[in-house]
Amino acid sequence: MKILIDMNLSPSWQPLLAQHGIPSLPWSEVGDVSAPDRDIMQWASEHG
Image (cartoon, rainbow, N blue to C red; front, side, top):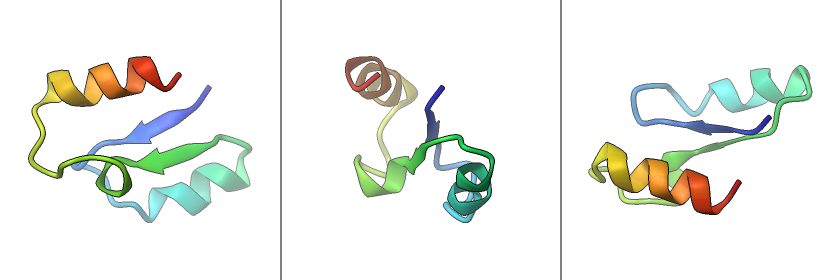
């Protein structure tokens, strides 16, 4: 499982998730911070 960290959560979750073997990526690193949820979900679907 991979996690896309939404804007409602701090990117500081990324190291904690990594410690438990869960790859993650903050949305703020790959997309527009004001993007609607449908755009975030579409990106997540397209990128596994």
